Amino acid sequence: MSILKGIVGGILGYLLGAALVTSIRAATGAEPWDFEVATMGAYLPTVVGWLLGVGVWEYWARPWFGREAKPYTTVGWRRYFNFDTDHKVIGIQYLVSFLFLFFLAGLFAMVMRWELMNPGRDILTPSSYNGFMSLHGTMMVFVAVAAIVGAFGNYIVPIMIGADDMAFPKLNALSYWLVPVVVAFLTASFLVGGYDTGWTGYAPLSVTTRTGALFFNLAFLTLGLSSIVGAINFLTTVHKMRAPGMTWSRLPIFVWSIYVTSWLSLIFTQFIALAMLMVVFARTLGMAFFEAAAGGDPLLYQNVFWFYSHPAVYIMILPAFGVTLEILSHFSRKPLFAYKWAVGGMIGIAAMSAFVWAHHMFTSGMPDVLLKPFLASTELISIPTGLIMLSALGTIWQGRLRLHVPMLFALGVVFNFLFGGITGVFLADAPLDIQLHDTYFVVAHFHYVILGGGIFGLFAAVYYWFPKMTGRMMNETLGKVHFWWMIIGFNFTFMPMFWIGMNGMNRRISDYVPNLGGTNRMISLAGFFLGMSFVIFLWNYIYSWWRGADAPSNPWGATTLEWMTSSPPPLENFDVIPEVVGGPYTYGDKSAKHAILEPRL
Image (cartoon, rainbow, N blue to C red):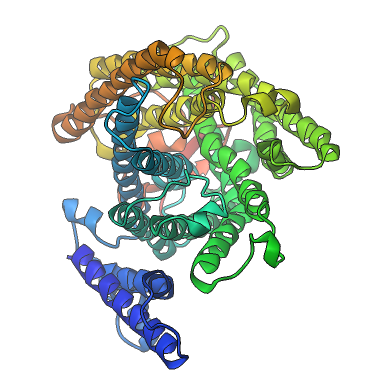
């Protein structure tokens, strides 16, 4: 199996890299063996060994050395465990992988909420609590950053624009097979004692804390590489592979969201890679990026990290906005309201996202003269965000709403993000942010944006495109039970966190004052209730894929191109070449068409 070969290749790569580093240290008179230095030196050989073993050598690299590439012969379910260049296979690989990571992160959250049910120590030491908290946050951020883009960007975008695949199919497969490396490094961090920095990994703590922090940085670095490779592919695909007649003004809004997100990933991800490399080099080579006494700056990491990580918030939420607007139009039976303004809102968010990072640092001791500009820029970015929300509301206004499960989750995104957005305006205000910084008010705000917006958007996409991806329908009743269970549990879990945050409960700490015990107990019980909702989803997802009712080509009666081919689509997506002749949302005009299909030459 390719995965077994990849594991062997990764192990051999690690041993080779570690041996080389150890030999160099011995030759220079240093202590030969240092685990962290050896691991840093073995990073690239490990990744390359894994990739060569998992299929890059057999299906891609052999012709570089005058040998014939191995043909793709794997069929059926085995394709999903191999290096496959079909964008549809890669989309499903991304989806299953990140759903697994999502459920694992959720289990860590349940452990945390068990510890927080009562003041004092219950099941975790402060150190182990911080380890669970850090892994939970890291995994959830990775899911939010990459799940919709990786799964539905890969599967749906080429079909939506009338292409037969992504522009660089082998590069696309490479971007996915970096993801298991990310999971492996996160697992390794847990096995060596974890790390206690949270998902932000602030230096200088991340330089001096236990070895798990090294694997955290390498995992983040690897995901960043995957994101950059994927972004290049999406941008090229949208620019060069649109069907005849698919002008920019005829692109579905979901394609626009992936396109804008790809620009953000391409431009800003290199900065988080720089931050991670500085920490790795400080840990292993003794570099003094963050030591003031040696000429470094402790705030350097924060500036570089947030210069990426606030745009990353929009990398998390823009694809969910695209899913939401897409679904709202089809299930309201109306053209997307203010389509061009919604596109402009996405572009405006991307353009302004580079000028708001320092609002995460209002308490860092930054000069007062900088508070007002970053306060203003953070407030101003709510304007293009508001355009997207107004587009959503205008689309459902007086629409013929069909409240199927995808529509319910899309409406949930609008409802939840309203609270996330409003509380974000409060946190943009420097005096108020200084009071609420690092409290559970910020935890609640962040979860309303990322879980209430991004993850609800992910589930909307799963229910909406599941028939297209599998050829089967998910159970509608179980889906509605999942939605109502999840949205009730979500709001009962995170809404009270605003209150405990305003009453002084700090995040990332395993204990609190006794008078907050009752509210925390309620939050934990609501969190367990929320966690159980995903059991409903998991059963529905697995059973429907196995035994669900057969899906027609267009079960929702939608108008975009992915619904003009079979479910699931054929190898090249369409039996005939699509020609786009109108906008993607042709509701209200019986004579209008989005595309016609002409025979292939």
